[in-house]
Length: 284
Image 1 (tube, rainbow, N blue to C red):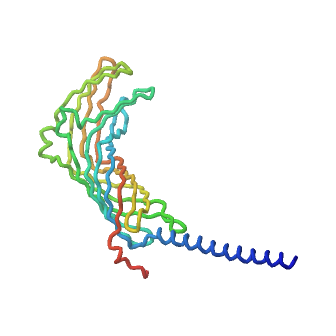
Image 2: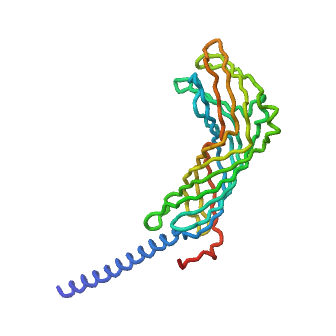
Image 3: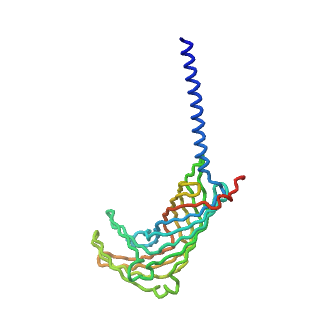
């Protein structure tokens, strides 16, 4: 009786052990398959198409400390296309094009978490800035942060951008130096004042640097979904101007100036498509 019981125990142990090894082997096989699918060859080439939101930046210099120093304004959706060329060791080069709207923004913190922000682009006296757009080319590079088991965390981007506005110098020359007056009433503070706006100079050319970060999700072998944030730092002023403040309620001792350099934040999402997959060399 004991011998039969012992045989049954040994039989169960052998089959359990074999099943466990088979299960472990299957898990390892699936893990290796996932690792292989996540692999991005250093020579991979992608084309991406996306759309997103532009947050143009206006720098305001106000010695009166009445207006905010930096004003971001959402100026609509912009299309973008980028070509990405893998180099080596997770580094890549990129070149792209996008089409963005430009504007001038002034904002103020009235206290008690009450603020206002106004874009002068769409004010009727400033029609030359209505629908002002910029054709932008950017070129640079990046790095894919890839960890253990080919886990692709994020991509880092950096480079230079160059833009040309659809409003030429000759078109804008008749508006440079002109002054327009806007009346503002703040219900929260009960202040009433006027802003005399003067466009002092204009340039259709923008130039600067950019830094960014993106995250992508693999949908298939050929397609990836991504989200991206890029911040541009403009070097050249595209618009410079002056605000002269007039009010019976508050004293303004100094004039306020502003500069727009084509910088700001750019948030986008889209799809990346792999190119020339059959031409990637795998014997490196």
